Length: 55
Image 1: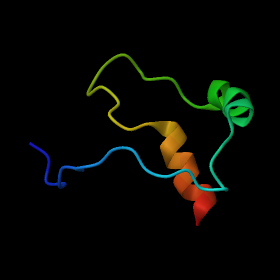
Image 2: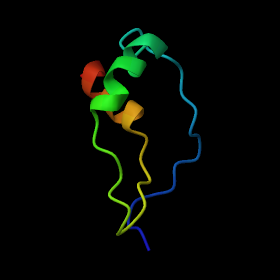
Image 3: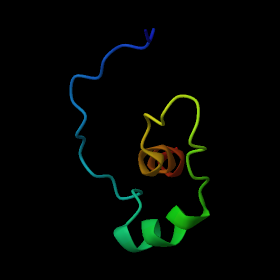
Image 4: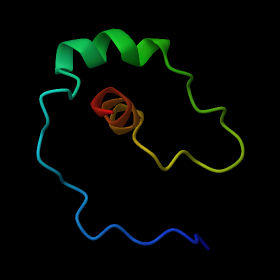
């Protein structure tokens, strides 16, 4: 059970700082893959990077 609130709207407007598809294709192979054990990944790493680049 998560203590985080449910997000009502998962789609958001695109920002100029968001990764393009071409940029994502370059960065995606450099990110760690799921380990295969433990909890499955529930976050979108592209959205995490978009948030970092926005700030």
